[in-house]
Image 1 (tube, one colour):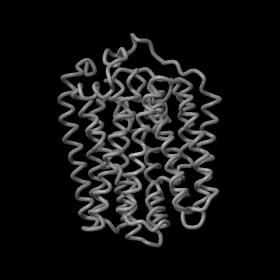
Image 2 (tube, helix red, strand yellow):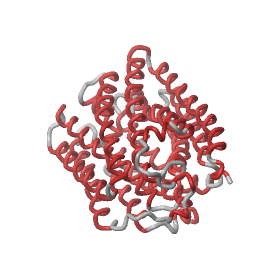
Image 3 (cartoon, one colour):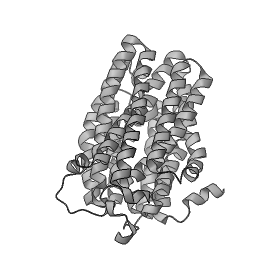
Length: 409
């Protein structure tokens, strides 16, 4: 239990966000199953599935940018509540109607509003924690998100064949409960720190400079954006290439197996996030990101080498998830300490847009390779991307130590 001391002393609003993340993700049964819904229920090929995700990512471009702009200008709590309310209506509608193209479109629209709110969630977590608490705050949010996801994918896999409509309804109901909790329990969203508490790099800048210019004019932030894109491309295969292979290897039980793999991912996060946060606290964020990239590469390599072995699936996902933890608890704090606080929403939204769009375009390439040349070729490309992530991080590490000297004292 001493490990949970890691999260003591944060503002009470952070714990409300923590429970909100639990309830929201408790109903996240659809998105992990979306590849199988499109391929098995709708009869789409791997390439067509990639087309759907590509279209969704294109639609999310203005959504991400709008979300970032709104986050830097308006009350972040209200943005979350409004976007959640619209999403809930969309998910419930999908559950009450027959699965068809229209319901898939409505699901996509609901997902877009979830996209709009994400910059607000991250920026609010940063505002509600001091710079010294930042890593613990992001770790707590990540921990809550996965605590809610433990059972959701497995239940979704069980409901997939005959009760998919119920999964949509549970998804909407869970997000609704989270929204109600945030509405009644979070009132004070003032920043948790004074100007003298923050480092010189995150002091607010005068409005006038564009977020794009702040990214392109900062070598480290630009490399971070490249790293984020590459990481998104690689991570995308967990929800795209991996389920395709699982269902292909085990046609009758693939949905249940993949659901249990996803649950294993969440259980590992819940069991090891606090431990990893405490053990890696003495390392700089970028070193933890390098560790995360190396473990992702190792996990994917095991999956690709033992493509039809169920035990290998779980060994692979465990190693992959430990890498995911190391990455997630460090990447958010890394960026927040190096950019002006009043530009966080916009810079986050721009990196999200680039990551989403390019990873979906890349998924189209992976889909074509998968259909034409097989699984091994597709995984080979993915492993090359994982290796590039590590290379970019080592380069970024050199420049970061020169540019942000104060953060290494």
